[in-house]
Length: 164
Image (tube, rainbow, N blue to C red):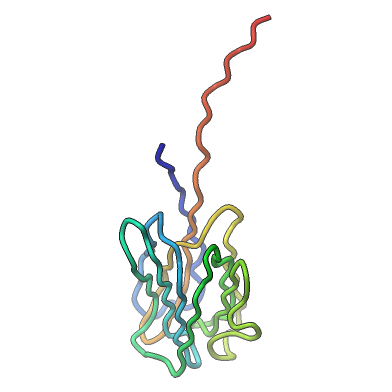
Protein backbone atom coordinates (compact mmCIF):
# COMPACT_ATOMS: atom_id res chain seq x y z
CA UNK A 1 0.00 0.00 0.00
CA UNK A 2 1.51 3.40 -0.97
CA UNK A 3 2.23 5.80 1.87
CA UNK A 4 0.85 9.33 1.65
CA UNK A 5 2.60 12.36 3.08
CA UNK A 6 1.62 15.81 4.23
CA UNK A 7 3.97 18.76 3.85
CA UNK A 8 4.36 21.63 6.27
CA UNK A 9 6.18 24.87 5.53
CA UNK A 10 7.85 26.90 8.26
CA UNK A 11 8.87 30.49 7.54
CA UNK A 12 10.22 32.25 5.73
CA UNK A 13 12.31 34.45 8.02
CA UNK A 14 14.55 37.29 6.84
CA UNK A 15 14.12 40.16 4.42
CA UNK A 16 12.13 40.99 1.32
CA UNK A 17 15.04 41.47 -1.11
CA UNK A 18 16.22 39.07 -3.77
CA UNK A 19 14.05 36.90 -5.97
CA UNK A 20 11.48 34.40 -4.68
CA UNK A 21 12.62 30.77 -4.55
CA UNK A 22 9.57 28.47 -4.43
CA UNK A 23 9.49 25.41 -2.17
CA UNK A 24 11.84 22.77 -3.49
CA UNK A 25 11.77 19.28 -1.96
CA UNK A 26 13.70 16.09 -2.55
CA UNK A 27 11.90 12.88 -3.62
CA UNK A 28 9.93 11.07 -0.89
CA UNK A 29 12.56 8.31 -0.73
CA UNK A 30 15.43 10.83 -0.60
CA UNK A 31 17.93 10.91 2.26
CA UNK A 32 20.11 13.96 2.99
CA UNK A 33 23.74 12.83 2.93
CA UNK A 34 25.82 16.03 2.83
CA UNK A 35 25.25 19.66 3.86
CA UNK A 36 27.21 22.58 2.37
CA UNK A 37 27.16 26.13 3.72
CA UNK A 38 28.76 29.11 1.95
CA UNK A 39 28.93 32.24 4.06
CA UNK A 40 30.61 35.54 4.85
CA UNK A 41 28.91 38.30 6.82
CA UNK A 42 25.63 36.74 5.65
CA UNK A 43 24.54 33.27 4.62
CA UNK A 44 25.31 33.00 0.91
CA UNK A 45 24.16 29.51 0.02
CA UNK A 46 22.76 26.40 1.68
CA UNK A 47 22.93 23.11 -0.24
CA UNK A 48 21.37 19.84 0.93
CA UNK A 49 22.74 16.91 -1.10
CA UNK A 50 20.60 13.79 -1.13
CA UNK A 51 20.42 10.33 -2.58
CA UNK A 52 17.23 8.67 -3.79
CA UNK A 53 16.71 5.06 -4.81
CA UNK A 54 14.33 6.12 -7.60
CA UNK A 55 15.96 9.37 -8.75
CA UNK A 56 19.67 8.98 -7.90
CA UNK A 57 21.71 11.78 -6.37
CA UNK A 58 20.59 15.40 -6.31
CA UNK A 59 20.75 18.62 -4.36
CA UNK A 60 18.37 21.23 -2.99
CA UNK A 61 20.03 24.63 -3.27
CA UNK A 62 18.95 27.93 -1.78
CA UNK A 63 21.24 30.83 -2.18
CA UNK A 64 22.71 33.73 -3.94
CA UNK A 65 25.27 34.33 -6.57
CA UNK A 66 28.00 35.50 -4.20
CA UNK A 67 30.12 32.43 -3.44
CA UNK A 68 30.92 33.71 0.06
CA UNK A 69 34.22 33.97 1.81
CA UNK A 70 34.01 30.62 3.56
CA UNK A 71 32.80 27.14 2.72
CA UNK A 72 31.90 24.40 5.20
CA UNK A 73 30.51 20.96 4.54
CA UNK A 74 29.74 17.91 6.60
CA UNK A 75 28.49 14.42 5.87
CA UNK A 76 25.51 12.96 7.71
CA UNK A 77 25.96 9.43 9.07
CA UNK A 78 23.55 6.67 8.11
CA UNK A 79 20.30 7.34 9.99
CA UNK A 80 21.30 10.91 10.95
CA UNK A 81 18.68 13.55 10.15
CA UNK A 82 18.48 17.32 10.38
CA UNK A 83 16.30 18.21 13.37
CA UNK A 84 16.62 22.03 13.44
CA UNK A 85 18.02 25.06 11.63
CA UNK A 86 18.61 28.09 13.83
CA UNK A 87 20.46 31.39 13.75
CA UNK A 88 19.92 35.13 13.35
CA UNK A 89 18.37 37.24 10.62
CA UNK A 90 17.51 40.80 9.69
CA UNK A 91 17.30 42.04 6.09
CA UNK A 92 19.24 38.88 5.21
CA UNK A 93 19.81 35.53 6.86
CA UNK A 94 22.92 36.45 8.83
CA UNK A 95 23.84 33.08 10.34
CA UNK A 96 22.86 29.44 10.67
CA UNK A 97 23.55 26.50 12.94
CA UNK A 98 22.40 23.02 11.90
CA UNK A 99 21.27 20.56 14.57
CA UNK A 100 21.07 16.90 13.59
CA UNK A 101 19.87 13.85 15.48
CA UNK A 102 23.53 13.19 16.41
CA UNK A 103 25.40 16.52 16.57
CA UNK A 104 25.42 20.27 15.94
CA UNK A 105 27.31 22.11 13.16
CA UNK A 106 29.26 24.12 14.05
CA UNK A 107 29.55 22.72 17.56
CA UNK A 108 29.55 26.26 18.98
CA UNK A 109 28.58 29.51 17.32
CA UNK A 110 27.21 29.56 13.80
CA UNK A 111 28.15 29.85 10.14
CA UNK A 112 27.86 33.49 9.03
CA UNK A 113 28.19 36.94 10.51
CA UNK A 114 27.38 38.34 13.94
CA UNK A 115 24.50 40.56 12.77
CA UNK A 116 20.78 39.99 12.66
CA UNK A 117 18.39 41.49 15.18
CA UNK A 118 16.07 38.48 15.24
CA UNK A 119 16.77 34.91 16.37
CA UNK A 120 15.03 32.14 14.43
CA UNK A 121 14.65 28.38 14.91
CA UNK A 122 13.00 25.91 12.57
CA UNK A 123 12.40 22.69 14.50
CA UNK A 124 11.41 19.54 12.62
CA UNK A 125 8.30 18.12 14.32
CA UNK A 126 8.55 14.65 15.89
CA UNK A 127 7.77 12.00 13.28
CA UNK A 128 8.58 14.41 10.43
CA UNK A 129 11.73 15.07 8.44
CA UNK A 130 13.24 18.06 6.66
CA UNK A 131 12.83 17.59 2.90
CA UNK A 132 13.10 21.03 1.30
CA UNK A 133 13.88 24.72 1.35
CA UNK A 134 12.34 27.94 0.03
CA UNK A 135 12.76 31.67 0.49
CA UNK A 136 14.30 34.63 -1.33
CA UNK A 137 17.81 35.06 -2.71
CA UNK A 138 19.91 37.58 -4.60
CA UNK A 139 23.59 37.92 -3.80
CA UNK A 140 22.87 36.29 -0.44
CA UNK A 141 20.01 34.37 1.16
CA UNK A 142 17.51 37.13 1.90
CA UNK A 143 14.86 34.84 3.41
CA UNK A 144 14.82 31.18 4.46
CA UNK A 145 12.01 28.70 4.99
CA UNK A 146 11.91 24.93 5.34
CA UNK A 147 9.61 22.15 4.13
CA UNK A 148 8.97 19.19 6.43
CA UNK A 149 7.26 15.93 5.49
CA UNK A 150 5.25 13.64 7.73
CA UNK A 151 3.54 10.38 6.78
CA UNK A 152 -0.23 10.53 7.01
CA UNK A 153 -1.81 8.00 9.35
CA UNK A 154 -2.90 4.84 7.57
CA UNK A 155 -6.68 4.48 7.85
CA UNK A 156 -7.68 1.42 9.81
CA UNK A 157 -10.68 -0.62 8.73
CA UNK A 158 -13.61 -0.30 11.11
CA UNK A 159 -13.71 -3.04 13.70
CA UNK A 160 -16.56 -5.52 13.51
CA UNK A 161 -19.19 -5.13 16.19
CA UNK A 162 -19.07 -7.74 18.91
CA UNK A 163 -22.32 -9.70 19.27
CA UNK A 164 -23.12 -11.33 22.53
